[in-house]
Image (cartoon, rainbow, N blue to C red; front, top):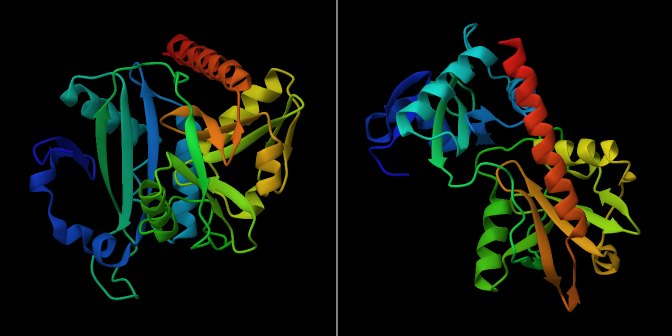
Length: 291
């Protein structure tokens, strides 16, 4: 993002170049915080209720204390101001939350601070790309299973190193394993396998991020009558699948073209993407009727 781009700093519009970095020192020095990435479609954050619920849950898990006025309505007002400042209705929104103040490992305060940033997107609805992904498997570092595993924490080096490894080895993305050697997700996405018309994804207990898009896809699939299962996944399962889908909040559903020597289709990916767009339109219509 350009230094002069508008950002939302604790609810106030400013520019990245003017943000007082003293308030970010725990985020910069200790990685003391988390982030939430949200797709904005036609001015409406997709699955906002689920994103906000995860924000509240992660604040509790990290003992972060928002000010009373920093609620869902306050954040939505700031997001709309940010969209207006950037003159866009379709965007990738990132909210970064951190513990303010100084201190070493013992903080001076648990007061919450946050920054909101957006990058405008050309597309509104979720779309399935024509070109699928070439997928690899990363095993040098493994993600630890813990009560904090479902959240998008700052400074998570497993994903960073996996993404670097993927680029070096000419993969579009790579799969990440937990400390038991189970495949749980990709560098920035949850994973779904399609086998015999069924949808399979690793369970939350495996250590994968509790993705909002993961939940949206499961809900859309169940509404469509598609059997869904939370199951442990290994390399043999990837190779036996007819489709491998990667999901995240911004891109929606991306389909995998190849893993090892296996090639895949994306029929289920197309169907679920259509369902996601329909569900978002219905959600927006409900909001507009209540306004």
